[in-house]
Length: 527
Ligand SMILES: Cc1cc2nc3c(=O)[nH]c(=O)nc-3n(C[C@H](O)[C@H](O)[C@H](O)COP(=O)(O)OP(=O)(O)OC[C@H]3O[C@@H](n4cnc5c(N)ncnc54)[C@H](O)[C@@H]3O)c2cc1C
Ligand SMILES: NC(=O)c1ccc[n+]([C@@H]2O[C@H](COP(=O)([O-])OP(=O)(O)OC[C@H]3O[C@@H](n4cnc5c(N)ncnc54)[C@H](OP(=O)(O)O)[C@@H]3O)[C@@H](O)[C@H]2O)c1
Image 1 (spheres, rainbow, N blue to C red):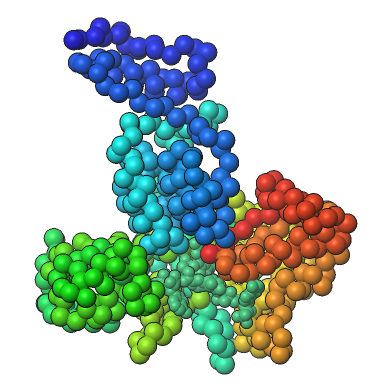
Image 2: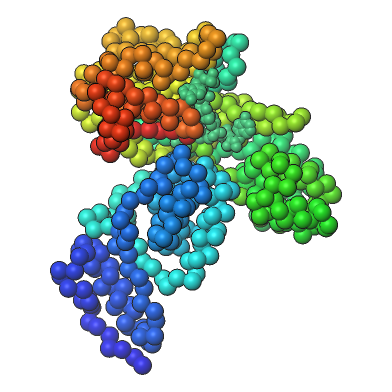
């Protein structure tokens, strides 16, 4: 049966339907297309989701909640909301989206890669795989932007993105710790001239780096093939160096290994592929260790590369202000090096920058815009910045910006690290800013200078009365650095200070801090 074709532009939705003009026009076009199809009446009508069909709340959106608990909180919600709950809830942008948008594009099948959530790792990609299977059993769904929001396509897209990175020039590195420190933290600088890259304080810098060539050579030796073995238009060596992640070993690699072996070894490989941990060593199995665990298994190089996951960019909080020099960008990075048995393991991006990149190297990069991590619009608003370790990065940028713009607002920095003699990052700059009265107050917490630990939150409690006064004056609070422990402890300290000096019950103090978050006066950049 052929249905009558409506004259163009077809009108299917009345003017008073609850859609924006863009949504109405898009839907009218969509329905016109459907009806014009021969046999269209037999097609299942798509679900049209405007914004969120559930209550819009995301109680799982807290990186401190473990995945099983997050999935419980999302139980009974629409599939795309459960997909969001599977993400690590950091909104870090490493996948190229925030958690909610990544779920939405998977749901809309505009994105098919289920392994992009770096902080969620294998746990997230396994859960997404399970959820993705539900998609095929659902009728097609169109996700429209919530009413009042302009469609994505209308937004001006930056020229340089994660998918279209520019080449920033690596300029220099400087070790931040003095000899004797247990840490290895670096200040790196990049030249952005001619890249089209621009940034604001609070943004992060995304970098695509190369794997360690020594590790690549070790893997090729275990595979027992020539480094120039062709992989598409590339070679095994180049694919391992540029394209795939070598840590951790993915489920698909264990699956591949299970096809190449038998008996107990096959059962172990299958168990590892299913996320079990038969020998209690799964957490330490990178790609090389996985191959070494099953000696003699020599996967076909092409199948091997296919089983590995893409090498993802790494994000770093920018530690400079473009108001000082728009073509220069600085980072403050802790080098990840640790030992498992006899082999030293290297964090791919941090040690690439710390040891392998050479001044003049061009590194694919993009700027990840901050989601809700920015200086107050009103320059006279006081700010409290809490950033131990590399957490100082965006606050150096904030201070530079407030100095360059002569912002009249007061600035208070809580910095901490292991030892005052070795780990006082940017000491001279901070001292100069204090002398210049840009940095109104500087509170320092050295965790290993005495026989008991002193952390930034201890300093916050010591000066709780002043802290409360700043809050009462409308100060914005910022926290940057370790997500797992520090960020939670700092929030607890703020609740305690609020309860004690704001004369509130603990419940009221918790609600007060939650209110600060809601109105953008408590912002975090934690990882
Ligand atoms: C928004 C954002 C901003 C960030 N800003 C900064 C910043 O300013 N400065 C900064 O230094 N980092 C920052 N990070 C972290 C950074 O992105 C990288 O995660 C970090 O540098 C590690 O990357 P890598 O490639 O060197 O290590 P990877 O190759 O990713 O290895 C890290 C992994 O190694 C494992 N690992 C690490 N240490 C150990 C250990 N001791 N024992 C066993 N396993 C271990 C863990 O599984 C860890 O996930 C930020 C992250 C985000 C999301
Ligand atoms: N994803 C990654 O692979 C990766 C890479 C780099 C860093 N990180 C994370 O980022 C964090 C930042 O590392 P960093 O080098 O900047 O420094 P850091 O390890 O966070 O240490 C900075 C200071 O914070 C102290 N600290 C420890 N626990 C704390 C707590 N609960 N509350 C407040 N302070 C606490 C440390 O003290 P003590 O150490 O003396 O206890 C130290 O003085 C690391 O903790 C790590 O988890 C992750």
